[in-house]
Amino acid sequence: MTRKEIRMAGFGGQGIVLSGVVIGAAASVIGGRFASQTQSYGPEARGGACKADVVLSDEPVDYPMAQDLEVLVTMSQEALDKYVGDLREGGTLIVDEDLVRQLPEDTSFSLYRVPATMVAEKELGRRIVANMVMLGALVGITGIVSGRELEEAVKMMVPEGTEELNISAVRRGFELVSV
Amino acid sequence: MTRKEIRMAGFGGQGIVLSGVVIGAAASVIGGRFASQTQSYGPEARGGACKADVVLSDEPVDYPMAQDLEVLVTMSQEALDKYVGDLREGGTLIVDEDLVRQLPEDTSFSLYRVPATMVAEKELGRRIVANMVMLGALVGITGIVSGRELEEAVKMMVPEGTEELNISAVRRGFELVSV
Image (tube, rainbow over all chains, first blue to last red; front, side, top):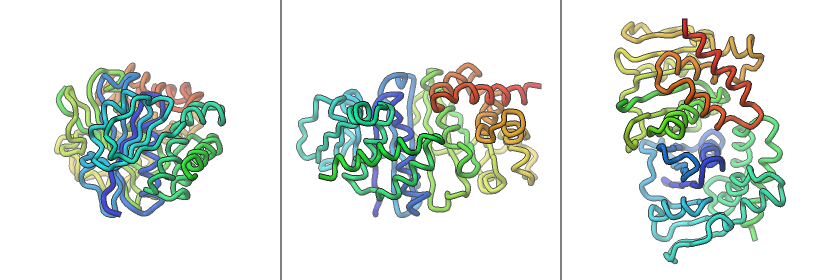
């Protein structure tokens, strides 16, 4: 693995930051590689666009800002509109299909539509785990960490007592894209 | 406020990352300023030193890495030993007094010893909120955000149902340093 840059974006309250932290931990603490994870935000973050950048590498990460984004996951239209310009040509774009309706015209992207929020709400009964469904899908699509690494990191990072629900959500997301 | 750099460090499982996220949110989403929050880690992070850097500013934060650390909070001896060299001369050093026994000889630092883990365990009955006690102390000592901003950010970022415990811990930490 060389340097890989991933951004997850959506709105406040979707657990975007936790998603970034989990991927970073899966790769580093569990997976034995190096990771950095950054959020930068301002006053506009209240209820608005929210993003978490993750950089994964085989070597220590000196510069944690995304410079050449390979994967963009968006869970809101605003986040897509704001950040799609940062995704490199030929990159991977993953969207929550019920929250992002207007897709970009650039057809060089590999585009995946994942019904993360719908599945979290209707199948798992908890809209709050949409981020975990999306994480499972992200890992199923990109293989940036293994399914086992992801599950171990989720167990480590989510609140005590919620491990089972979160793992179910991750597995469901993984299945959604493993056709 | 000009650029202010803060690092919180300890070991995995102490909630160091969440502490960084809370301070970032308190300043930005609640406080109307700008913040970035970064974790960088590698394989050694498992059970080992863990750090979260926060940069607060009146302007958007372009470079999120700490370059001139003004405040260092350490909740383990290993973290102190590893990071004290990054604290600037005359900076503020805050340690959990039961977990950090050997203090640096540099007497230019403003040094504060906070019994965060002891108070979390003995007074609040939950060792896990030591990070929140420490956040309250950090804010009481430095004023980097207001007590109200901190409490609102805690409510926003901690798991549902744990708000009350976490707020109590923050207030207790604030009191500990308000002599």
